[in-house]
Image (cartoon, rainbow, N blue to C red; front, side):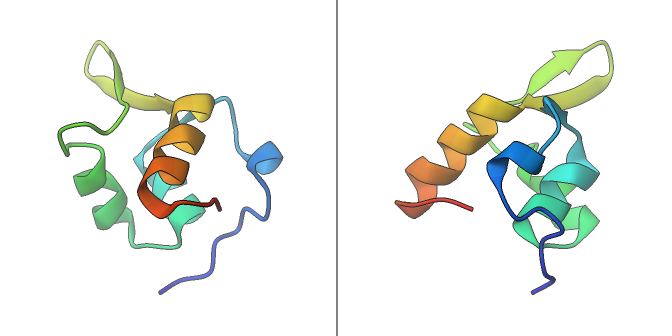
Length: 69
């Protein structure tokens, strides 16, 4: 597992793309991209672009880990 470059939720940008999701979780870019296509993952589509609102990402992490980043 890769180390996350983000140490707190405050370090995250307002909207996360697949690369940022991967960096935040410490996984490969392809894993971040795959996660964004999973049902239930909080993705916002803007045209062909997919982003994740920071607050929804934090909520998703907490719901799926029982804790946080």
